[in-house]
Length: 268
Image 1 (cartoon, rainbow, N blue to C red):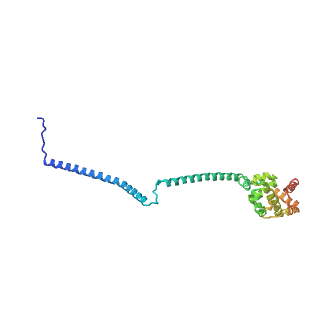
Image 2: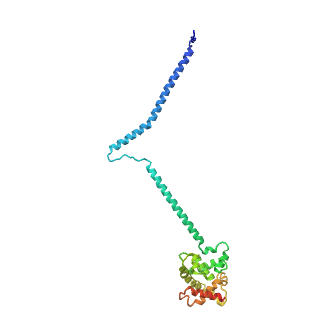
Image 3: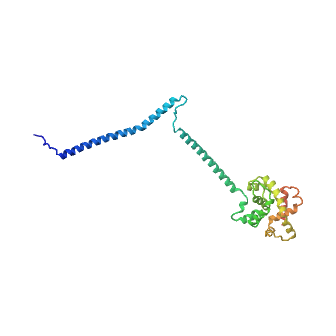
């Protein structure tokens, strides 16, 4: 007649069906409970923020003199960052200026002429050309012996002063040339160094005068035997002999010294 045959459930089937229905009911209740817990957890921050806002509003309303903050909490951090960036920019600018100044000073030190020029490679040949001394070791000995009588200078060392004096006697350079080489003024070259240094050196080396006049040998640390052969020191000695009565008592210009040096050069 078109109807399907019905099947009667066995006791085991009824029991299994009951278990499935019960399981679905428990699962549904558990899902509802989880959803409720999630909703409650999500509402906690909102409740806290609302309570804080309400408390702030109550404090603002309760205090007539107090004003509610209407600025962003990050404004202080932003202003601090801007200040630090400005300081960093100023520091970088100052560092660049100091680096350029340091480079300029280093180049000036390298270009400055002085005792350092005699050191290093070919120091003996440079010493002989500039001073007439046979070696740099003799220059060092002479510097140590005459340091106490060399005139002071605010910008030159004692080695530079001795080198300047010996170069004037050896090469007869112009004052302007010496001032350019040693980076000092012309007046400092002529008045402070040469006019004061030449008579002092001649007087300090008077023991060589007796040796040259009497043709005797005086040994002072083995260095005088070298000094007797030096053309430059010979000029100093002759200069002292010729001008001893006047140069040490009256301050003469450098022309008088140069005249005596030229006179000695033509008679040697």
